Image (tube, rainbow, N blue to C red; front, side, top):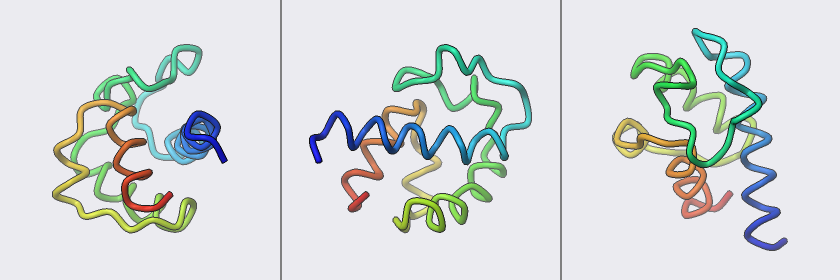
Length: 85
């Protein structure tokens, strides 16, 4: 699978997960690599809850410390790919 289609697949998976977890209604039309974690309605507590969902859906374990330092969806996608997604 090419990196672009892998990235698109992960973004689609994350959107599905985030639609369930988000505390606000993000602008799904502009959902992509440059979306900030804040604009997706995720605070640090929600992100920690999200780790379990990511592991279940995508099959990749991420450390909370790594995830809490990210600021954009693109950084999260890169972290997932780096960890074997």
